[in-house]
Length: 200
Image (cartoon, rainbow, N blue to C red):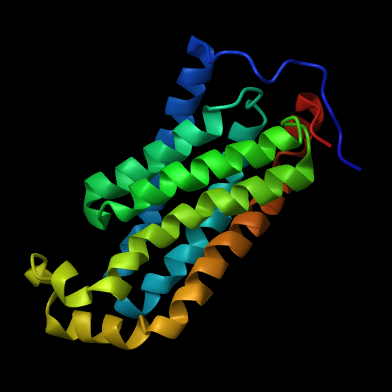
């Protein structure tokens, strides 16, 4: 049964909120960077849509226990998207970050930031941002690697084999499903924190 806390969730973001956003965004980006190293092995590239939401869910669930106001989830998702853009993944993660961040925030707000079910759904939506990293590989893989010649033709050819159009909904679905599972995993690790935050 979903719970509701009595604290106000529609107040303005304060300094403490922004600090929490910055800290957890930095931690999550470090986790993504470490996992993305697997991408240097082309056959493991799709696994990023599984491992980032799953492993990152532990950190993000701790962040969610501190979310009581609208905007926090939006901002952290946009920051993650911006980080992916800056680190060479193209601008699509940033665009996805804006859209997914707002939707994820609205979902969590719908549960008054105190519902485990809404939190899991919110985290799943949030992680669709990761699909933005793969979108250029579907739209124009040759153009994407035109300025990335260091990867070599063999690397690109393997990715062309993997990133066929029919795999797009699968990877997008994985980002969402493993986002939900990552939330569940994080909740199991952070059970006491969730109970203390009144999330049931």
